[in-house]
Image (cartoon, helix red, strand yellow):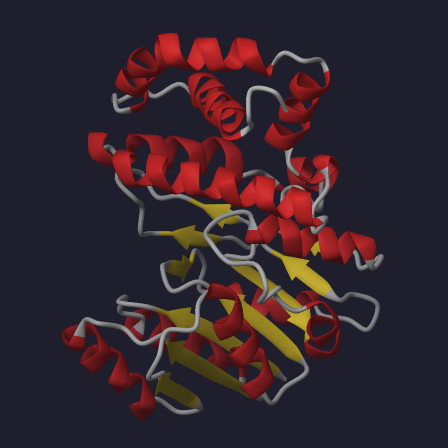
Length: 298
């Protein structure tokens, strides 16, 4: 028995739900698909999503007020009826017609969390080159590589978890802002000795931000990262860039990153907006931005 949970905001998920419903019906399993709209402002998309209520075992609900990424996922879990929860982001899509079958086959008494991985479709748009390159090289990891770092390679875009275990962890509603929620959730799993079982059953990530939007989101995420670290809800081992940043800070070398960032910011941005962005330069850009968030005398 499985509850498939999808939060959405200004994004049409009818085709996603229709595909999942057909897969579940074919397997003849006990299931439900719950979608909650976080007070979308696009009425046309909301009307399209209302059609979800015409599908068997599917329910679409619209909130009157926006409650944010963590609260809406916790609300979905609260409303779920069944013992296994499969969380999917609105802009994902199964890469296989046996997507649900593969997840169901992985469920067992001795497993609590299952992650199938992420894939990215071919994309030649210059305007989305940075997000696509980052996704392909940093998120779309093969199974063997994910097994080497099971917590660091975990992404909440698509994962299954036992409801009793989720109720123990949940998404932290006290943490506002954008970015690194995945790392905080994985940190809590690790801290509670809850293992992540990795399988080869990815979703496609379809909706990519433009280079400019991704850079802005990355900067917001770095602000969040420092906030999370200062509040003790994440540690240096959870995020590689945080580990490098703290090494530079402890060695009193952040000043050099500030100088580098000031001198080469424009050149780095030119590369990051090109058809072949360098993730090495992206890491340097992010380290430079992180160094600017820290007072010079800190």
